[in-house]
Length: 76
Image (cartoon, rainbow, N blue to C red; front, side, top):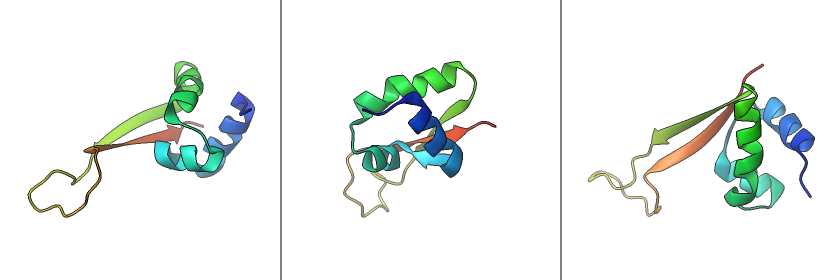
């Protein structure tokens, strides 16, 4: 089972990481990670960013289902 300390160490080592990368690295679903990430956000140690992707635009040829990406940045 993933601990808050393991998650913290990984976030610190990467500085900025996507929710997708976190899910792959820890072999888990976003629903499992999000409460743990919210813990560090409440503590003021983590920032959540969303960015609009190019998916769904007329010029886009990608086939992903979401139009945005979620990133987390560790705050030293």
